Length: 324
Image (cartoon, rainbow, N blue to C red; front, side, top):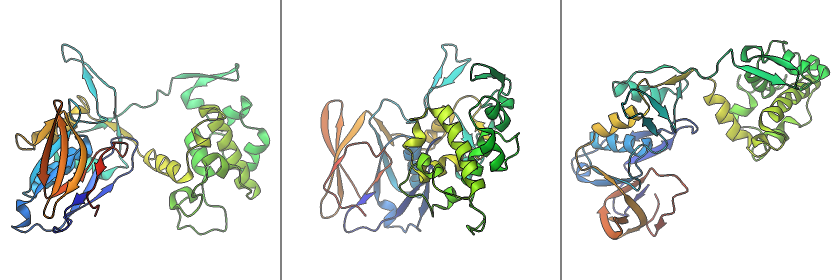
């Protein structure tokens, strides 16, 4: 977020955990009559940008949303058949009931959710060219039978033979006995493992039972992702976010996820959203922020009191303005 040197920062933006829809939570200070006349430019027409624009508009501010693409929605990309009878999701397709902020927004917009069928319990699998079954059978004992996990490690871990894959992972990151971590797992507290990969963490020296549990988890991750898979790259803290997000039950939006972006857009005044506008540079004068925009091959300059960046970090925007 960028603002000129003479104005106060009105909005504090905090990103929620990524990986599914990528919402943003905004907390606002009270807006007085003078501040309410301010003009805010929101850069990015994904769910974050639309949500922020909606909230700013509700606060009575003038809002302009700039999106460089031909549509709003960002990672939400619902494709419909010619007759509109069926649809497919090419982007975000589910949320989890462990994301209360997103669920609150969906309810506020008058939308409803329904259970998302993520895994088919009758989906067949084949391990080690001989062990067959369905997804509901994919447990610790199955991994032992297939030779993925040794019988010694499985026994030393103390895990029930019926422990499923997800619970093996969570057990591997549980706090060792004798350590007080407030009832949370090591991976969730963030007090350990900064900078180290998941694979390295799982091979660290530990008491016998803990070490065996971690070896079981590493073996399953090697099977699922490959021995050079993401767990050899992803850091522990990042993996913590994945585990926490996946702790909830999956939900979807009946009728398509683009109903969320359509509902957000419908609450914005006409003329708020501008498509095909790529922001290339931010600057400032003594009293305003300047925004250089390429639209239809032409370079234009816009002026605002505040600019809120709701675009991916990978977007290359040159700036001479002072971040706040």
